[in-house]
Image 1 (cartoon, rainbow, N blue to C red):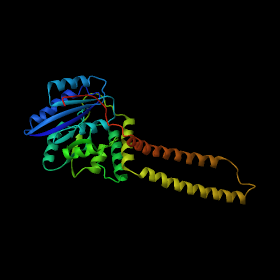
Image 2 (cartoon, one colour):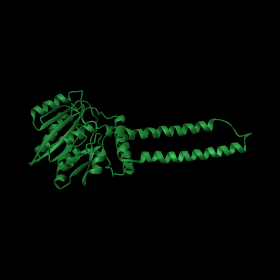
Image 3 (cartoon, rainbow, N blue to C red):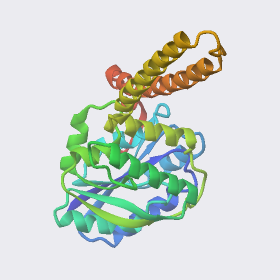
Length: 309
């Protein structure tokens, strides 16, 4: 009998963990020939999520838990959870029901056909239309700018064969971006379209800062265009500045008596160039933050406790 590991990252999901576990168990009851290993990895919830997970683990030995000592972010915790699985394949799914549980048999079916990775790709979404539009723009932009072909509207929801899980374990990346890693290092994959549902209960922990953090992680990990733009625009601006200065000097020498001596052109030039410098210093800083995180080699997650392992 084959074992399918299900990894469920949680953060303040007290209203969702019980119905989600029940739905997953129902799916496997209808799938003969497969047993499941359900792993909740909790990112230091401050509601009753951990208490409920403890009870689930006590009632069912196939349900396991990892409790992080602190909140290690939306990328490190799920990645770490994937690396702790022991199944023949692993499915990563959100705890808020936005990822349809009924996709699990579809993923397994495609895996049995030989696909090492099966990705769930959002083609429709019931989330905020503005957010979905901005996400679409971001995915298209990063896909054009990246040297690696990125997967549009892929959040990590999908199935990963144990061979690819071993690749994830061996990467030793302290700041992993799973979506990019799947696109860059993953074997031939199967993409399955689905409609993202609304969150069933609770409140999302995502905000604009976290979305920005995700965008910058992918941007600085998989594109060079930011640094190239800084170089090219800096070169163009410096060339134009030299030309303007040269023309200004010639006019000043030729028409010394009546040439205006106002400071407005100089101030405008200072503000324009200064703002460009600040923008690109900030952009370069994002790359440096990414490099610094990887150089420090901090652990992905520090565990406080694990249950049923």
